[in-house]
Image (cartoon, rainbow over all chains, first blue to last red):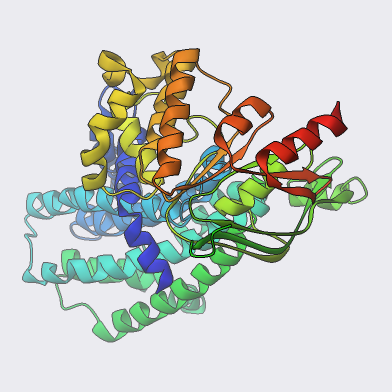
Length: 257
Length: 246
């Protein structure tokens, strides 16, 4: 509770920081913020080319299927890989001024969430372009977004604060994310996984989130509320735990950085 | 001291030690391979510090290099935390440990005012109310909309100082920066700080300039080797300090 009050007090800092994150990311590039839109688009074209044209994936409307998985995944992956650096990058300020340190990971995840919401236009664009259309289930989009936000934030809290002490983590995180990418049904559907390996997807929280998005955008059915509800509760619990860990670790930040 | 005044900073039995690594292993690989090399030494910087600073006091922390002044100031701002003991501060606190910490070189002076003031916990509305005052105090005039990287170090300092001094904090912590800037601006800062003192703001300075100590502070605390050697009226402490160190 105290933490939330503190963040509210520093909301202006959070706001300017989020702005800085969004603007700063593509600074000095000609297309600027447009890249946050172009990047996922080009990425989708690459994956679609590899999996549909070369590997001949038989799935109908494969591009939409891919978008609905890849774009939310990007939100998670970029938050994490950028979040891991956030305290190290901002070491200079952290050593010299007091402000609630949680502002840093929160602004990374929030700016990525904003990016994600903008990129959702790509999913909608392909859904319409492919003739699949948009279903009314889209009203559940904010719900899944909130679950993903809380989940991503908790993981980012943990990764960012541990990285300050164990710098190896920042190198490990790229590989770990790649592994997790293939352990999540993004480029393929869960049902093509051999039975013996299904457990990997079953214990992967990101799989449930991606499947949720896929239900509303691609399958256009009611998302599984029991699973999502469970994910919501797990995310909240994880967020509390990771915040406690973060809070313990942040006391030493100024000395470690 | 006046007992009716509220205690603003309370330091109780504070100990602080730093681990000094001879050759720090940052990664697991280095930790495993060179576990012998990773020797650390514990250095006690502060030992059992107790003090109370009341509302409206202007206190100077003096002492030779390495006596723990800056560490004590950092502990008060909550940038670092004590190993033992407790530090309580009451009210909004602003610190100036290094000029322009947190300035973004590519952003304009005006944008940096917003950014810097928000680090001190101000909302947009509060900054809007103060922005003219801050710009005026900084005397940057037309340069305020230029990127900060084009500023001279004097301009940089004036901007940083103007923000810190105008955010209406109840406690102001300043580390060794009064020496920068030209005569004119320095005098202006002194005047402003004397005003703040009259308004009942609490200030703590770390400085080696005995001149400014005498000019601004009512109380001086002399730290020696991590302990308080003397605490009292400025004139007496400064006199004794000069007598011993020279």
